[in-house]
Image 1 (cartoon, rainbow, N blue to C red):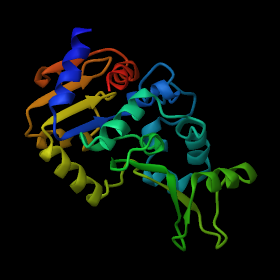
Image 2 (image 1 turned 90 degrees about the vertical axis):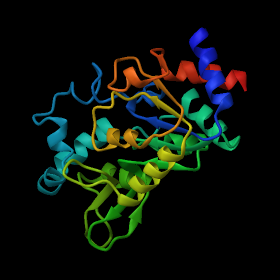
Image 3 (image 1 turned 135 degrees about the horizontal axis):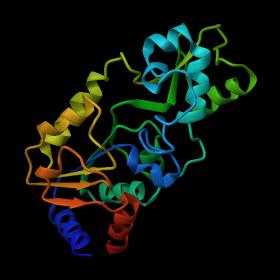
Image 4 (image 1 turned 90 degrees about the horizontal axis):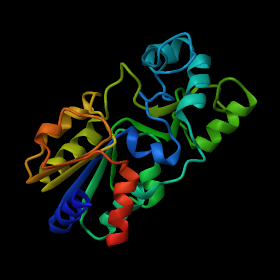
Length: 244
């Protein structure tokens, strides 16, 4: 309880908080993280996830990519958990500058967050590679129900606007995330092992007062944290919700 009280005090005193999160934020919504026992790295495909989720593999084997993508990456029935809801509430109160997320599931926006920097894109934005027409996730899934590949009326292949291996992060998203992190007085890092770059490298721009790490396993930022919490992140934030 002492750790949770410390977190409450840090949030209460903060005037410009930023949350930096990863896959662990969504596990309590039923979305497995990449490296858990049930995650993407424990699967029965012939190629490793890094290969299947690469730009070149997508172009060469879009049928295998989409089978894996739908099987492992897309969870259309997932709902926001307490962590997503608490962050949306903190933004509405003017406490939270923004969420910087490595996730592609859109659950922060579903919970009500307005300013979300999606470093790795979103499954909810899709575009035809030929004509550029945009499509929702529901439209892509409807196409995949009828055929192995989702194609536009023009015949072009639809591609999710997620950042694949071999692809660069959106410079505008990076710029916005860096700006907010550099302006924050409190940085809360949650649900991420900080093993993925360049995303994890953005933390070096923080110049504020306090760092909180909420993660069940060790991270490279643990030694810099003013507060380290190893409880499930949804459980931690549900306490924050009750204290508001």
